[in-house]
Amino acid sequence: MTLFTKGRAAAVAAFAALAIATAACSSDDAPEAAASDGGMASRMPSPQAMSTEFGAGCAAVPDDGAGSFDGMAMDPVATAASNNPALSTLVTAVTKAKLVDTLNGADDITVFAPTDDAFAAMDADTLAAALDDPKGLLTTVLTYHVVPGRLSPEDLAGTHETLEGDTLDVTGSGEDFTVNGDAAVVCGNVQTANATVYLIDGVLLPPQG
Picture 1 (tube, one colour):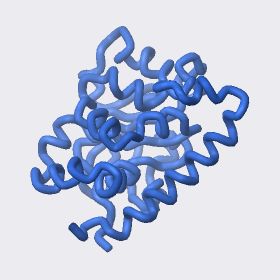
Picture 2 (cartoon, helix red, strand yellow):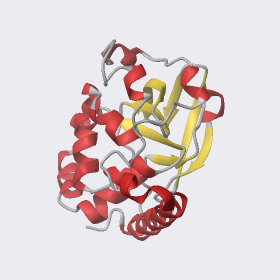
Picture 3 (cartoon, one colour):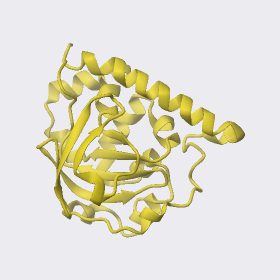
Picture 4 (cartoon, one colour):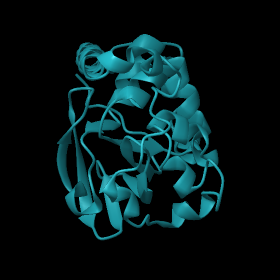
């Protein structure tokens, strides 16, 4: 399949660089970094965690427990997502691509997280092809949803380079944002220990090469 050939090499290079940077920053606590939560479960949330989440989709987030906003703020992003009932398909994909430790160990990223409904609406053949190619196509698609640095709502609109290597465009303001002209933010400014998360109602696909 040739749909994302260009993005595969960029995704591999981006994650290799991220892995090297993570290792360099964690030489004093390597055993913790090897754990499934990246050794970050006890990290205190950033000051941004005091910000308010927004969007109709936030109603699906539990009021308490590990899947609540307070609970997610205490865990690294992949672990936090696994506790959110709206992100089970994304977590399955991240696990299949073996990106859990990489995402959990990254410092300060923004994740555009497709909900289960977003995956359900995706072209079935494309989704099947991605799941059948976890180290190639699936990694390319998933890394296209990750942007270095924490983007606050005030900084969200604009063009942002992704870990996959291509860029995505966010338009809107206030509490109304759309990614690549199609995927709407349904629950935004969700904080985890190492990421700011924007739940979206569509799966983002890198530009065709």
